[in-house]
Image (cartoon, rainbow, N blue to C red; front, side):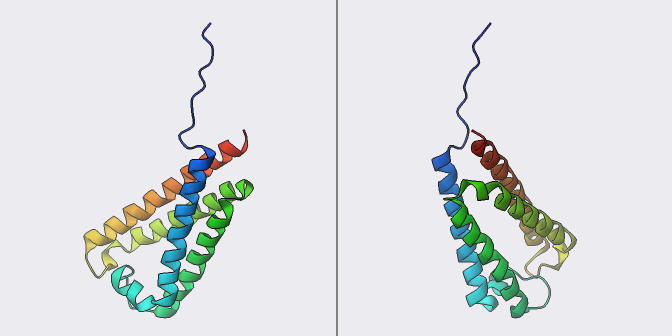
Length: 139
């Protein structure tokens, strides 16, 4: 009988920490842009429907909160899987919302489709990272 092979995980603890820091920083920067310059964010990214800087600020509040939480989770392994799962759910629901509004992107319908696909891929990546985090925490 052949001895079991020990395969190295795709992401080790150190790499996962770096990935979480990058994801957290991305969301803090994105949320900061939304919060500090909502008109600019709407003009360059969020061109769906009428401009409403108050709602862009509302989105900024949970984008920033998620980014800060993920930055904290980089050093707190027990936080990782739950927060990444929450992010996957958020991105998944966000993608569904975009799916219904693909044709409302003022730049183009293609841009609406690309936004929807990218957000959906983000949901998948966050779900995968949640599973990796859970697996690493069980070692």
